[in-house]
Each structure stands twice: as structure tokens, then as C-alpha cells.
Image (cartoon, rainbow, N blue to C red; front, side, top):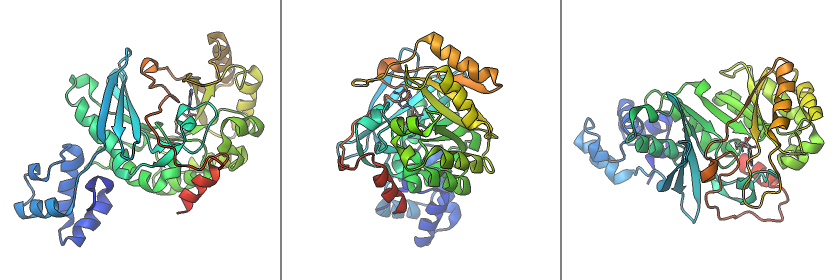
Amino acid sequence: MPNLMDFDAEGLSAWFSELGEKPFRATQTLRWLHRAGCADFQEMTDLAASLREKLLARAAIIPPALISDRVSGDGSRKFLFDVGGGNAVEAVFIPENARGTLCVSTQAGCALECAFCATGKQGFSRNLSAAEIIGQLWQVNRLLGRAPKEERIISNVVLMGMGEPLANFDNLLPALRLMLDDNAYGLSRRRITVSTAGVVPGIYRLRDECPVALAVSLHAPDDALRDTLVPLNRKYPLKDLLAACLAYLEKAPRDFVTFEYALIDGVNDSDAHARALLALTRPIPCKFNLIPFNPFPGSRYRRPRAERMRRFTEILLAAGKVATTRKTRGGDIAAACGQLAGQVQDRRARSDACGVSFVLEEQAS
Ligand code: SAH
């Protein structure tokens, strides 16, 4: 029985036509489901009773179940969702004045094993379905609906939670299309950001199939260092990654790529690193988003001192670049970047050194 949350508009209308139903019925259902946040066919009152019965017998609406909802001292909220099989994933809502950003997960765990990331340390279980990805938005929308008005707007979505979005492209795509659809969440392309550790073929696919804002987790200005921090770099080195970024800008909704750079004490935070970063990215219209390293249990790295981070930022600014430092939010509830751990049953062969070959198989299938 299909879960209607897995379908974007096109998928839903194809399924309705198999049922012998007109496309506008699919649109009505889509609006109920995502705009009204309705999970009960019987409440979809402008559908004919006969259609409602048919839907009840042949389809289900299953969002991921909420396990917990924790509020941080700074107002950010971390939601934990059950995705079955002993796995749970996290989404984080970060309110800011009149807007709010929801950070969404795309996989239970992550196969990339970036050296400084808690999710990577946990191993990889599986890709989330489209329903589980969009379901985070669906659930949080409903839960925020009960909060005071000014705190309940999801104006931006960032695919920066657990997992590598571009290693789960087929399920990411319908979820992105729902976020963009006026009959669903109606967000503009520039308010949705996909962040990738550098899955190069995925960047080209995203450009061609659904160009939204792109963020790339760079973290190092040369291959030797990046190989150690982001093992995926051994498969897709900086030259290929930067070429993909440039190509992405042909279709990107913003005229720049955002480079994320986690500042790690004594590892990638020197003046020389900052200058090398400028030289490396010179051909690419870009902004830098610096993320002070967020510690997690068992992590061997440290955050640089404030003065070092300030100096690193200044070098970028002096070169005329835009460089922002990501405010650490939700640190007290382990909801900051790189701290999302949820609960993951690692199903990956540990012998598979850096997970790269696994990700490629996933992509090929
Ligand atoms: N896999 C995607 C999505 C994760 S986004 C990607 O790599 O882009 C989460 C962002 O936080 C990435 O830029 C990631 O590299 C960064 N990050 C991971 N662990 C971190 C940590 N401990 N401190 C600060 N940033 C971290």
C-alpha cells in the first residue's frame, strides 16, 4: 500500500490516474496532506465520499513518529523521529526573528565518516524515504502550529541534518519538489539549501533536476588535508568539486555557492589556511560560512580560540569576501552542527574503509 507522503505532485497524479481519478483530485489531496497537514482521508471533506473510501482502502498516510521534542535555552528545538528498525533521526528548528529555519536529515546515519562529525562516527543504516524526509517538515509544521504565531514559521529549509543528501538523491528529489510546490510548502528555491560533503555527480544532477541553493562542506584548502577530514575527497578531489560548483552556478537560484568551513583548532585554522582557501576558491563566486567546531562525546578535536577565529575571518573579509560565522545554537541539547546523532543501527561493513564505495553503489542503483 503506498504511503502518499512519498509522492510529489507528479507522482501523486500518476498514482491517481492509475486509480482512474482526475489530476485535480490529486492536487486537492496534496493540499490537504501538506498545506493543511491532514493525515486522515475522512477529514478531506471536499473529496467525494466514494473517493475517500477508495483512498482509505488503497493508500496510507504515514509520517515519521515523533519520539521527543526538546527546547534549547536559546529557543532552538530538536525533534527526534522514529524511522523504524531501531533507527531515529533528528530535525532542528532554529527560530530567528520573523523567520525560522528547519534543519532536516536525509539518512539514518552517514557513510562518509568525516573525521569531525558525530553522525559519521555512528555509521550508516539506510537512506530515508521521501516520506521520512518531507515528513520531518510535515510534523514540525503541525507541532509549531500550536506555538505563538511569530515562532511558527518555517521560512527556510536546510538539508544539513544527519546524512549526505546527495547520496540519497532519488528520495531527496520528491521531497525538494514538495518543499517548492505551492500546493504543498511553497518555499522559493533560494530558501532551500542542500549541503553536500562533495558528491560531485549529485551536484550535476541537482543542477539539472532541481537547482536550489547549494552549500558545500569544504573544511580544507588542499587535497592532502581534506583527504583526512572528509574521506570522500579521495574519490572526488577538490579540482573536480570546484568544477562542479562552477557548473552549478549556471542554474543556481543564488549567484554564489556557500562554502562551509568548520574551524578546528590547530588543524585548518591558520592564516596560511585562510589564504590558501582564498586562492583555491578565487574562480568561484562564493560566500563562506565558518562553523566553530562543535565538540561531541569522543571527539578528539577542539574549537579554536575566539581570537584565532576572528583573525581567520578577517583574512577572508579583507579579500572582499563575505564570511559569516554560524552562531552555535542548540549546543545544550546536542543540536548544533555535527552533533546530531539520533540513534543508528550501523549496517555497513566496517571493513569498507571510508564508506565511499558504498555511497557510490547507492548512487548507481
Ligand atoms: N553531509 C552534508 C550535510 C551535513 S551538514 C554535508 O557534509 O554538507 C552539516 C554541516 O556541519 C557540514 O558542513 C558538516 O561538515 C558540519 N559539521 C559536521 N560536524 C561538525 C562539528 N563537529 N562541528 C562543526 N561543524 C560540523
